[in-house]
Image (cartoon, rainbow, N blue to C red; front, side, top):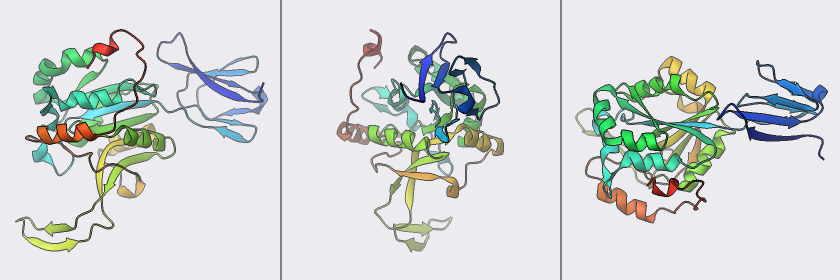
Amino acid sequence: MTDHNASARRGPQGSRLLYWVQTPRRAVQRDAERRPLATNNYQLSTDPCLTLRVLGGSLGCMANFSVILLTAAPPGLALEAGGHLVKIDQREILLRCVEMFLNRDNIKQVQAVFAADAMEEAKRKFYAHLSFTGVRMLTGGAAWIEQIVAAKEKIAPEATHVVIHDASRPLVPWADLDAVLEAAEKHPAVVLAAPLRSALVEVDEGDVPVATHAPTGFYSLLTPQVFARAKFEEMCAKKAELHASQLHLVKGSRLNIRIGPGDGSLAKAILNVLPKAKAKPLTNPFEEAQW
């Protein structure tokens, strides 16, 4: 038997996790305010992000993710809203985005945020499907940051990190999603970004060219973007996105484009060439019928 070991078990509290750490109690210093229950040589806690200092070492946080799908357009793209309603094979892109986050053990919650004036239509289109898969529908503002703030109070208690994803981006390679979630366990703010390959032309308000820029030194900012819960709450309190200097970039695929009206055929073509996720064994007879 080793001197110290950590594992997680699902307890009678439902979805909450119990963290067991096998170690002499005198060697454990817990970095959290809630007092753990103690039994023999074990420390038992319901804290989702338990940091223990054991014999001079450290057992890191077990990351649990809550996903927010935003239907608002990102800043500067207000005229590009509505991409989540574009269909691929008679299925709205929003549903494809939801699918990316299902059946992942470390993702505990998925929520979709809609503008107030679009919620009635959204319920008509998506309620039956989203409720079946456990996705919650929220009402927020029409702006990107307003929808982020609207979701703050609904984040699951056990979530240690929050994933923000543009519901008009259904073409995220599985490996990119794995990479950004893994990086989020080491950095408080992580975003997918793709290097540019073409020169940029800067224009004025009248679309008159005023300068050109080499692509070196520029990346295209993508989603998903993942934030430690404290960073996410900081962003909500300020009602502003984090400064670029606080972000850790994970290089992603250029195929992860934002879809708009009229791009359904393009999205389908790209989807057909994306690497497929490894099949996961079904855990119940209803999973096969979800999609």
